[in-house]
Image (cartoon, rainbow, N blue to C red):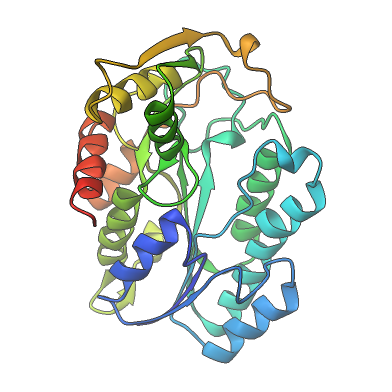
Length: 293
């Protein structure tokens, strides 16, 4: 396969870059090389390389900053995926695109399925939803994977923030009224590779398997529960206290979904892949961190 990967330097993209190399030649593009606000250059890159697979792991993910920088969020999260999908259609490529639990408002109390009504609470979620819709409308063959609470050993994320703070402080205060499924980016990358195996039969794309899926680790917890698990598993449990607080004590420009657990049953049924419980995934991530992987 000829693979063009956008966002190759991010926490998801870095894992994808290595794994996708087992499928063919990978042209990994990061934001230093191509600014996703430059829509004509995205289209030119796809037409010039004529890939068989385009993977978009790039996004504007600064949830609060997006409120003041809505135009950049719109270009990167909505317009760039649209251009990718249109160019992918022209060259006959499959597009794999990633989205978020923030397309939902968090009012549910049972895991969201793919066709549940969407109602984003802020600019970030709204632009990611617009990107999903643009990809679906472009006429290309595509798979959109919604994931949530993504973390890894690289980049800026909740895991790395908690580990840094636990090394510096004796007490952490973390919100306990937002519920979701912490998901290790390395496992999402691996599941993407397994999905690709299930998308092709004898070299032909199984088009009936294209579409929208949810993909997260199993189980759910609050940010406080996730922080508590990180602190204990990293060996700080005897020294660092993790105190639960309501969201009202940690105000942010954008209200987060109170409940954003996604059901991954459709993905499991279609591809025979189910991610482990979030606790087991965290153990693996920390083990790989200790091993220097």
